[in-house]
Length: 137
Image (cartoon, rainbow, N blue to C red; front, side):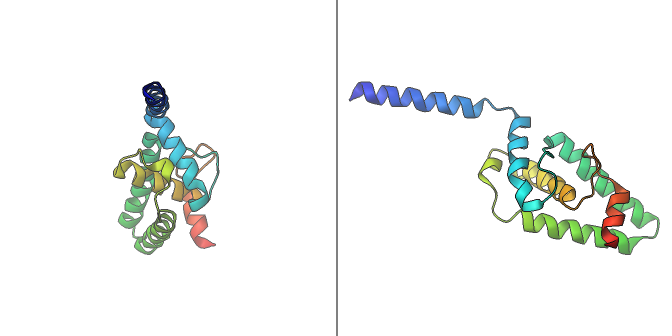
C-alpha cells in the first residue's frame, strides 16, 4: 500500500511539473485558443500577453484620436461594439485561462474580441481602417 501511495504521489508531482513548466506565453496562447470560439476570428490568432496589450493599446489610442478629432460618435460606436463582443466572449472563464491573472485574462479577451470583429491585419495588429469599415456594415 505504501509503495502504491508513493508511486501515485510521484506521478502527480510529474504531471504537476509538466503543467507548471509552461511559459507565460504558452499559457496565453492556450487561453487565446480557448477564447476563439467565444469571440470569433482567426483560430491562428494566439497573441502573447504583450501582443494583446499592444493591440488593446492601439485600439484605445485610435479611439482617443477619434474623440480629439471630433468623431466622438464613431469612437463610441466602436467602443460599444468591442465591449459587447468582449462581454459575450467573457461569460464563464475557460479552464485554459485559469493560470492567467485577471488583468492578463481581460486584456487577452479584449484582444481576441478585436480580432473576432475583424479589426486586425494579417499580422494580428489592430487596424483602424478595418474597424471603421466594420462599423459601416
